[in-house]
Image (cartoon, rainbow, N blue to C red; front, side, top):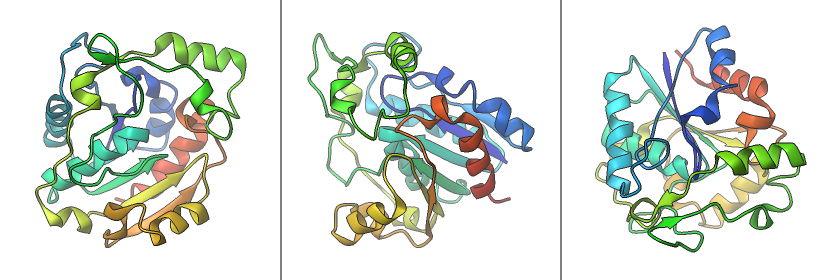
Length: 226
């Protein structure tokens, strides 16, 4: 099985460097996906460009299982929407699919056509509790501004068969119990309609690929059923 790994905002494919060898040890072929505008120098990339890159990776993969981190949970969900017959499953790490008509990730101010990393203040608390100063500095140094056309792109879904694609919500800085409460409160409308939704807990902050790469790989290997 091919595990397609999609990093969240401000990160390029190298975010998975410590996870890939751990997945390979466990018998999976791990493929970090390079997103237009996040690692290829395309500062005018759009959300549609990123969707196309994910779909190209899905089409080229053998029995793809798609992993989306943070905001890229929506990209993973869109892969299930556009390719419901090819995607074998989804894992969403610390993020939830946007509702139809919402902006992809219009979370922070933009400047000069891009949304730069806002610094650590917005992520104080459980998000960054397991990052020391060196870890924070390393992430901030590699952070890439997200093109405005990506962050403010509108999310559209096309195929209700996406709800039949098995999905695992990986809970890092929040617990499965919290996620279930949000779902029952109507805050996660796309996941509320999923036919096969499971939860997996990992004791980490928002970026387990940096702080708990072996544990994350073990969890992904366990949920990516053949």
